[in-house]
Amino acid sequence: MGNSTLSRQLGLTALVATGVCSMLGASINVVPFMIQRHVPGIGPYVLYAFIFAAIPAILAAFAYSILATAMPKAGGSYIYASRGLNPYLGFIASFSQWFGLSIVIGVVAYVTIPFLRDIAETLAWIKMAAALDSGIVRVLLSLTLVWLFVFVNIKGAKLYEKTIIPLMILMFLLGGIVIISGFYFTQEDFAQSFLLKKGEFPEVTEGHGFDLFAFLSAGSLLFASFIGFDSIAQAGGEAKDPTKKLPLAIGLTILIVGGYYMLFTGAVYNAVPWSFVSAQAMERDITAPGMMSYLLPSGLTVLIVAGAAIALINDLPAMLLSVSRLMFAWAEDGIFPKSITKIHSTFRTPYLAIIISGMMASVGIIGSHFAGDFFLGIDIMVTSMMVNFLLMCITLLSIEKVNPALTKEIRFVKNRKVRLIIGWCGTIILSFFLFIHTWKDIHTEAGAWYFHSTSIWLIVMGIASMIFYFKFTQMKRKGIDTKSLFSHLP
Image 1 (cartoon, rainbow, N blue to C red):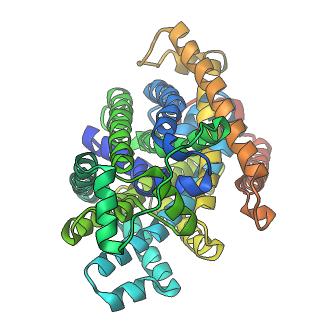
Image 2: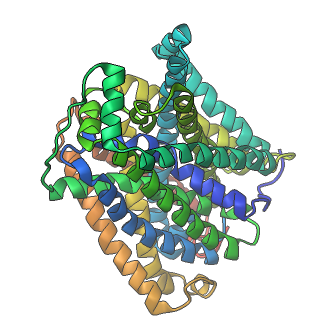
Image 3: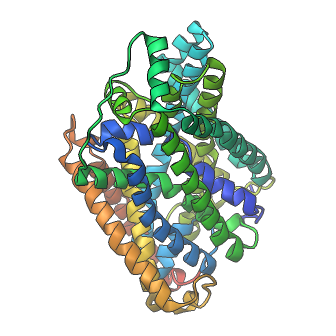
């Protein structure tokens, strides 16, 4: 179905929407509250941990923005590391990224269904709520969401933009209800509302000491909330005027999402006592709308739950675009079958790469259902993305020596000393975050070894290494000049 040339159709708004929608979703409506269960001891310091988590993300964003101007191609992070650092490291890092994000696409689809159930419960649609709570219905609806957006991605940039931009605007408007009401109401108002609805006051604990390790662990986990901007880089092959639009889109996305995170999380914890959130998280899966529902009338509750569901659904098309372009880039280099580079003759999209990514996301849905804990998928993604971002910062340090020709193409932060400062700061801080996250994962009690994200990640790295070794050896036997291949852009 056509050749392997992508069409540059994505403007600045679509690129920003891709980044924003990849970052917002579970990251804002679930993780800042369920973190009370996953990192016991974080208590009232969630917002501060969010701010702390933004530091390495901002440094990684600078690295991405700089490298994107020199290599504006599909498969962003893979292209940057394979051309500016090392082909092997570029592939295994991007493979772990592809695996982590593909699994999380399934996790997000799976987590979305309880929000639809909550809407049905609020509207007193008891039978529908019960149906949405059954395992088979939840799995089937999750699969339907994933494959709906596989279709949207295959149909191309126009439908993609028409889908993702209105959803992004609606998400912000409905999320604004949470922000306004969260800062309008007080915790005393919450206690009175809880009393009216439940017939008793909520259990609230006042004091809580600062736990440094819990704070660092929470920061490493909340770091996952900032990773979506890399999807902008993956779409580099379809961006209009990429050397200007890619770094601008990444910068705008970080500012918009970072500001929204702080307002949203601060609003909920302003109105709802952290100790109540913590106690509820220990007993069941909770969300921002679930906490705010005690304060709001049913009509507004339906709206904020709908906003949360839209935020989650928004993740799917943007993340599918990101992971499919990674596969496309591997296939262009010959590491994956060349057939994956086929472009649909009408829609100008890599349809095979999109379909395969949809299949991997479907595995994430099934895995979430049987594992019974979606945080495992998030942990895997965090490990994968920390390694990926770390390698982007190291690439910033190595590119001048490894590939001086592409270094000359850099159009953002041309000053070499400033680039080195960004690279070294990013490398040191991300290494620290990766160490904290890995330490916590290894020392957390789990039912079996495969419930540790580090174990799964290492297995994925082993698979990636075997794939690369096999394909790289094949290239050598065929007489392909691999040094030249990985020195130039595809």
